[in-house]
Length: 115
Length: 113
Image 1 (tube, helix red, strand yellow):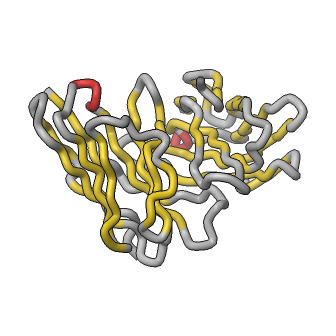
Image 2 (cartoon, rainbow over the protein chains, first blue to last red):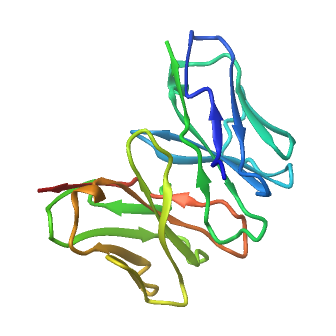
C-alpha cells in the first residue's frame, strides 16, 4: 500500500507568488490533516477534513491560506501572495475511518521556500 | 500558548544507555498521548501511544510513563541504538473532541556509538 503522497517535494517561489501543494491520502482513509513544520514553531496544526468536509481550520492563517478537498483522493493547500515567513515544510497526514485514536500517517512533506 | 511542552530540546546518550524524554501538557481534557518519531527528510511516524486511563505503556525498548495528576509523561528508550537517533514528538488530543493532535516542540535524540 502506498503511503500519503505529497507533491511537489520542493517548491521555490518568489515573494508575492502563489503556491499550491497537493496531498493524496491513503486509500480508504476518511480524514486528512495539514500541518506546518518549522524549526522555530515545530509542528503546527493548520486544518483537517473528514469525509471531504472541513471540520477544523483553527490553525489556518485567515489571510492568504486556503485548503480544499474536492474528492476523497486528494486535498490541496493554497497559499496566495507568499511571504518569506511562509517558508516551511508542509505536512499532510491521513487517518482511518475509526479515527480519534491519534494515529496519523504522514507524508514526507512539501518544503516551501519563499525568496 | 504552547499546550504541550517537551524537554530537553536535544539529548545525547551513548549506545546502550537509557534515554529519557519528557513531556508535559496543560489541558486536562487531553486523554490520548502518542509519541511520534521523525527522521530527517521524512514525515513523523507513530512510535507508541498511551491513554490517560493507564500509567504505563511498553513496547519493546520503548516505555511511556504517565502521571495524570501532574500532567506529565515521559518516554524511556532502553538500550539506545544509533538507529534511534531522530526527533521525538510528544502529542496530545481529546478523543471526545476535535481529532486534531497538538504536538510538542520535539526532542532531538542522538545516540553515539
